Length: 351
Image (tube, rainbow, N blue to C red):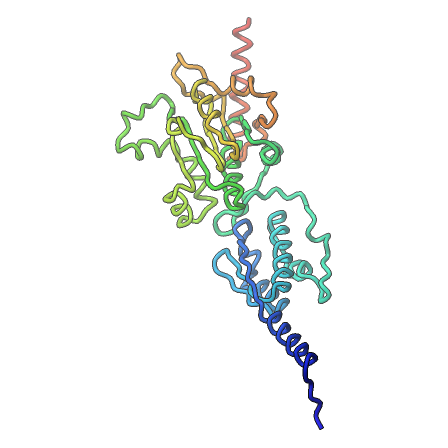
């Protein structure tokens, strides 16, 4: 005769069975953004690494679309997969490359053990991944100093001769901050003063007059963002490129702001810019004191700003030099030759 459960005991069994069903069917999902790493390095050739990830978590539904990964399944499984994917992202952000062997080791053994040594910081200087997985990183001592200083300060003056990568590095840091969602927008600005030219005499409408002055900023962004995404960002004003005069009267907050060619600002202009910065913003001011294009009756406001603000906590000054030149090898020699000539001219004047 079969066992028949009645009364309270039967209710408990039914309740326990129902709870088990609810627990097993309570699903969740999590979305991870891979914008800060090279997707080819994450997914592998022919999605080899991605297949390893899916085999590691057979009970999860793991889908990819562009730079996004969606994980669906039981909460505890989703959490475990999320944590290990974050370790992989952390490793790629620091090192740029990850073999299939290390990929598997970071995912861990069957008991969940992870070799923590694999994800230790190796001192890589990668800032961001550009188009087609291009690695953009600090290449020289002072560029690396600029990167580390930006992490600890909100306003940074980066001054040095042409070709030292100050603008390019600054733009890379801004793009990284946007991808990491540390800021909501990027604002890039320059004074519209170049080699004595006057905007009024240039052909075209206002945008066409201004664009040549801002071309170096566009060029840097072209290296770091796909054309469609850059166009989207600029159309929706997530990335804004404008002459310095357009900053007047604004409060620039939740933004990464770059003032380029600041040697061509007057004292009033640079003061105006610095007092626009909001409480949750970060700014890098770049300049080259050897390339001042202001009229002879105007003085650059950059050197004074550096001098009077140098002892304020949260404001830093990085000086790049000929050793930081990353253009053609002859550019470094050209800069040195001009420096020697200028020094000789100054000594001759003293005599």
